[in-house]
Image 1: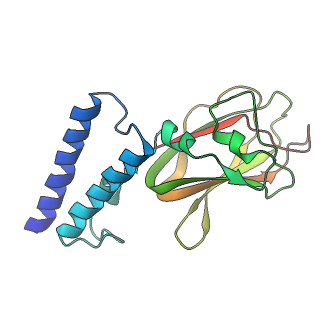
Image 2: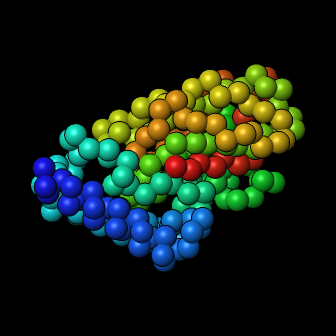
Length: 195
């Protein structure tokens, strides 16, 4: 049990270090490279303490992963089957990907595992609210539905909404499950996610 307390102490010390480096109230991560290094440090501390790094059996695994920030969500351009998938996370609310047909998706690969808890998105003036999206995460084996039945919206930001269940993943997909009948497509002007 002493080694487990040591790992928790090392993680807490690292969190204090992050606050000292970035300042109180600042985002705990300033770059994708630094986020990966912090996650690696946390996992290494757990492994050194004898904790299984894959299951983190018996421990709050969220303490070992960097919370996703909007900046990290936007760091890598999205790919996918939509027209212009990179526009879903480009920090530009004028441009948009076009989802048509049903099943089209935009995929964001963070390059390392992050804790993801919330999302918001900006809609399209031509939508009438009849379209639907779902958010999936990569389990390491397959794509898993997380938050479903997200309605299309008109040109305004949604409030931050919780995922059905917070997840730890290195990849996320936004998938059109029903096309908006006003335009026979879905055109979200931006999605954002954070931990």
